[in-house]
Length: 56
Figure 1 (cartoon, one colour):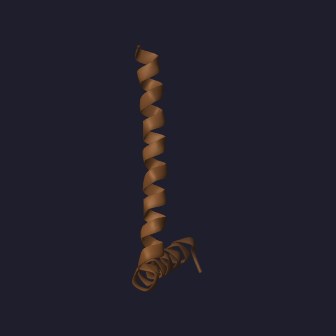
Figure 2 (cartoon, one colour):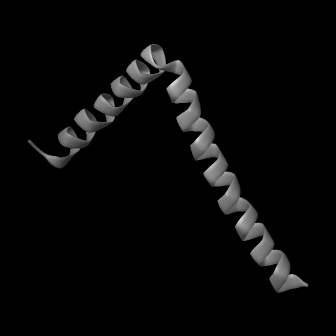
């Protein structure tokens, strides 16, 4: 089994898990995505504040 095949199997497995998770636990899935989105926004805000501090 080569690396490309393993990658393909893991990718399809992750997609299947995501569909299952959203279909059977929609509230939990929404909470996870809200948490991830909030974390990304915090990181973006931190970078923005950093670069603003460099310029001013």
